[in-house]
Image (cartoon, rainbow, N blue to C red):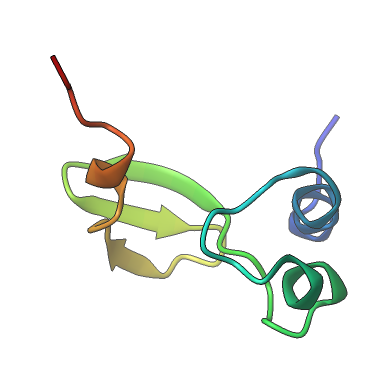
Length: 66
């Protein structure tokens, strides 16, 4: 079974809490489509539409503290 990008986007809007995002605007689609990441290599990620990005935000959630 294959799930479409549209279905993934709908599930994301309905069930995922995104920090620093206005949830009402996101849930209604006012902020545009969510970024669906398919692959990553080093600092580069690629979304479901083939757009390549540099992932400069991941370090915020991947910090070793102690």
